[in-house]
Amino acid sequence: MAADAAAEPRRISLRAVWRALGPGLVTGAADDDPSGIATYSQAGAQFGYALTWTMFLTLPFMAAIQIISACIGWQTRRGLIANIAQRLPRPALYAVVTLLVVANTINIAADLAAMGEAARLVIDGSALPYALAFGLVCLIAEVFIPYHRYAGYLKFLTLILLVYVIAAFSIHVPWLTVAASTFAPTVTFERDFLLLIVAVFGTTISPYLFFWQASQEAEESRLSHRRQRGQHARSGAAFFARISLDTWIGMLVSNLVAFFIMVTTAATLHANGVTRIETAAQAAEALRPLAGELTFALFAAGIIGTGLLAVPILAGSAAYAVAEAFHIRGSLEAPANRAVGFYAIVSAATLGGAALAATDIDPIAMLFWTAVINGVVAVPIMAAIMLVISRPRRKTRGRLSLMPLWLKLLGWCATMLMALAAGLLGWSQIS
Image 1 (cartoon, helix red, strand yellow):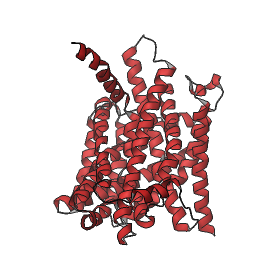
Image 2 (spheres, one colour):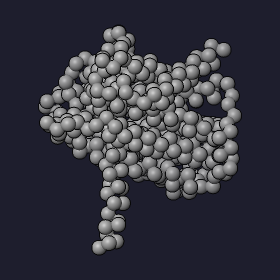
Image 3 (cartoon, one colour):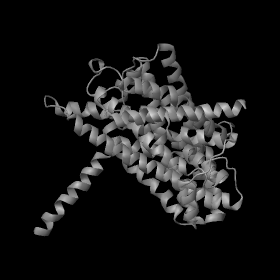
């Protein structure tokens, strides 16, 4: 009996931690989607371990901007577009939403194409039917499964990311060389190097992640408010602690997985002279003769699993942004017959991506330039987010103006980091 009593606090603590993980963990996992995998794989194949440092540099800035976005959603019970509309003129707001929808649709196409190719490598057949089937599965799940249940499925699906950690340890890696490149990096100002840095930053700190986590937290906040009814809302310290824990863990998982993808492809593809890949599926296929069937199978399974996680998030974040910009009511918690316009946007983004995946457009062009577009578009969006929380307290709902100073500083530093990366890209193009 005494032993059971001693073990009880640990069991409750682990359960509490898992329950605290939600929007932040799911958002971080979605960051390692098939297009992200391809970008990280290209970084490892082209430059070896030279870009592994980017994963540790971006971690605190990525976590800061995601925490800020999440707090905005939780406290206002509205998404980002509804909040930044007060800071951006309407033409600029519509331009941001348009770029987000275009980038997300192209990203969906790249992800579905990669998922189809990965399925073809594992079970043979044609890639296109698999890609279309995956798109249909994602769409049906998002339309017909209520948000509170769907979010739980997404959280368990994040466990698929563990395959990339296992893949890195299934091959020989010179870890001393990796450590030297990571913590004492050598940076050049060549165009290809700068372009890949912007692509890595853009696929790591992506605008759709800001919108998705803010909208998820808004959903969580509305559900919590309904459950509490007449009770007092969760205290500021409690909600901030929960969001911070969830987001830091989610972003840490995301960046560590990206780090291991770079290491795996650098130790196999780059080390054997393979310096260019077209898609995430091609990276998996190239690994088969170099790293063995286990690493290949893990990589391919990860592409499909992360795609099933990311495609609904890409479509959902686009739908939330468009719905808020044009005052269309709806959310993933609402049934389809009560949010026809909202789910029409979800369907259009998903089916548009599936249609693009069925074309002859170069998949590497879709995924790589989407990452670059994300890196550029993120700058004005992040600036607008920071302006939202910088408003005077009397104009702020809840405790947005009471966020810690360190968080605001990291948020502004993240914005300047993305602006610097975009500026360096422009400079490299001109020079």
